Image (cartoon, rainbow, N blue to C red; front, side, top):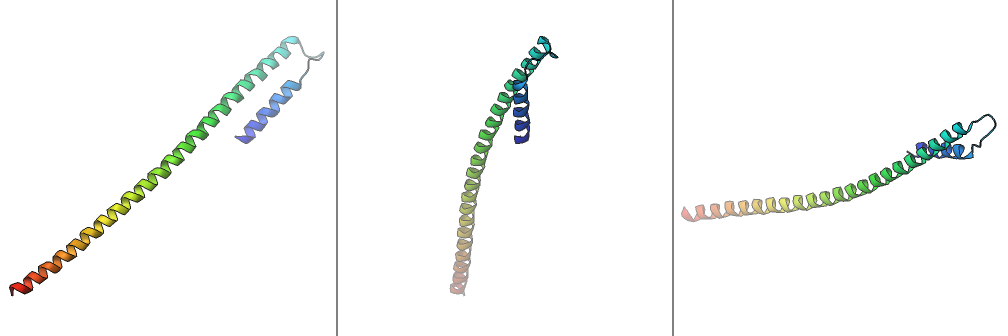
Length: 104
């Protein structure tokens, strides 16, 4: 992108520096001016689109980071829940063993 911008800037500079000489007709000079103006407009449009893409990219990066944090929190909650279930299961097994001992 930077190389294209540099080339476009150089081309615009060259077009701006062209002067009407005895070998150029007025129509050629007018064509060059129109082309220069067109390229300037195109450059502005491309820069605007590029800036918009950069803003969207930054928004998506922030959103992705937020989602990763949320997934991390949910995973932690799920792990804690699983551990609690496992602990309760272990306690239940121990209680069942105690009850079986008392029934004997």
